Structure formats: C-alpha cells, structure tokens
Length: 363
Image 1 (cartoon, rainbow, N blue to C red):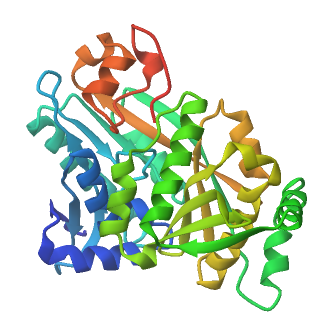
Image 2 (image 1 turned 180 degrees about the vertical axis):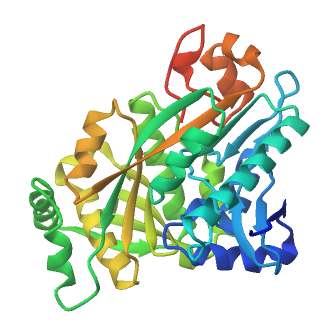
C-alpha cells in the first residue's frame, strides 16, 4: 500500500511542484507559481499550497489553496480565487486510478483540517475541465453544501504545418470566417505586444465594455502587475489597429500546452469591423506555431446562452466543471450579495442564489 505524506509547499520543493505540473497537459495556468504570486499580490489572499509525497519523497500530488481573512465572518478558502480560476487537485499521471484517488483523499483531508484549524467561514474547491474523473470523485467524497456548474469550452488546436492558417480557419463555423474576412477587408491589422501602454489601453476599453453590461471589471493594478511580474513567455497582448488607431485587444496567457483566452476588449465604435475575430484567428495560429494544443475559452454559466453560442462557433468542445462549496459559518447565508462582495473582493464565497437576501452571479 502506498504511504502518502501531505505537507505545505515550501520554496525548496517548488521545482518538484513544477515538474508535477508539467507532467500532465491538463494542468492549467492557474496552478502555476507565477500566477500564484500574481493573485496573492492582487487579492491580498494568503497562499497555502498542499503537496503529497510518497515513501521515496517524490511529489505525486498537490492542491493549491488560498484564503482571504475577514474579521467578522472568518477566512474563506478557494482553490483558486479570482475570476474563475481553476485550482483542483493534481495527481501524477503515472499513478493508477486507485492511487490517484488515495492522493485526492489525503489532500482533501488535509484541506478540511486546514479549514477547521483556521475557523474558516467557507471553502470552495473547483474542478478542472480536463479532469472529469476528479470532479466525479469530488462530488461524492467532499461533504459540500452547494454545487455550481460551469461549461468549459476548449478549442483543440491543429498541429503546426504548411497549411496551419487554413487548418485553423476550418475549425470555425459561420459567421466567424465571414467576420475575419470583413476585418481584413476593412484594413484591420494585428500585432503582438508586451508594452505597458497597450496593456493600459486594453484595461481602459475593458472597463468600458464590462461596465456597459453591468459586470465587474478587473482593476488597472492587475494589468500593471502582469507587466511587472509575469515572465514574458507566459503572456501576450494582441492589438488590432486600423489606420494607426488601436481598436481592440486581447490578453492571453500560455502555460503547459494551453493558451487562455483571458481579457478581450473592443472599442465600441469599431465593433462592426470585427477586429476581435481577426485577433482570435491570428492568436490561435501563433498559439499552434508555439506548440500549444488547446485554446481555453474559460467557463460559461448555464444561463449564458449568448456567450456559449459565441464561443461554440470557434470550434469548441464542451468540458464541464463545477464549484463545490462547504459553508462552515451559516451566518454567511444571512448576508446580502453586496455585503459578501465587499467582505471578500475577488474571492468566491458561495452561490448567491442560496442567500436569503437576494441573488446575483458570483464567479
């Protein structure tokens, strides 16, 4: 029988942790160490990453956790926080399914013990759209109070070759190819950038776009931190221009064979020229050229039919995942959505439709 010891991740074990991440293509950006540091700095959360080792001291599993303190209600734990980040348990792909489930169990027990020791108000574990087995296991083994489902949408990218541009285009359904042709005909061009001024332009347009639909935009400081702290090989900004004027942008992250469609923004006056369609097309080509296998569009709510259909026409396949939440402090259920958003900014607390004082989306 395999003996497993669970400890906190220390700087001395970070290289072994990275080896675990890269051992499986399904481990996403959100579990990386540079993203950990970015989110800790942005949210003020405390990171507590758990790692599982076998008898030989080999790191065979991990569970990234972050918690955010509140003086009245107590800490809330996420794996992971901030705009739909997937945390999820990772187990080494060479383990058998039985061994993986033992790793899951030991890491879950350690997380639950940590939550009790911290007198946490709530804990949410988010499954990985690339690992449905873990989601099924978590649904039956984690004593959760609430489950909130998402639709992950992922485009498998073609292999790089002489026909790559046409191979990518063949993935799309109308009107996407027509949108791309319109952007080209309208003399829209796309360039790559790592320039701070372009990032801040993206942020300003992002704020306008999100405010217009009543959402919560990301803060300027987040984009500044990306420029300051994230290695350039892990992020790219694609800028669309027409006659020398910036009209749209898209921030993507690249990690472990997957490119994340992270923050798009288009100047309203130029939407009819379809600059975002040309950006996505060229960014997918670049992603495949770099050896990436997947383009991850992120999660979609079951009720977001328009968003789902927009992504679906880019050659996506559905891969569902879920948020599993255990509420320890029942006082949370008596609060309004506004109170919880103020108490735990950028942290997932619980599905707001479970509150007694009204509901609104929380992701």
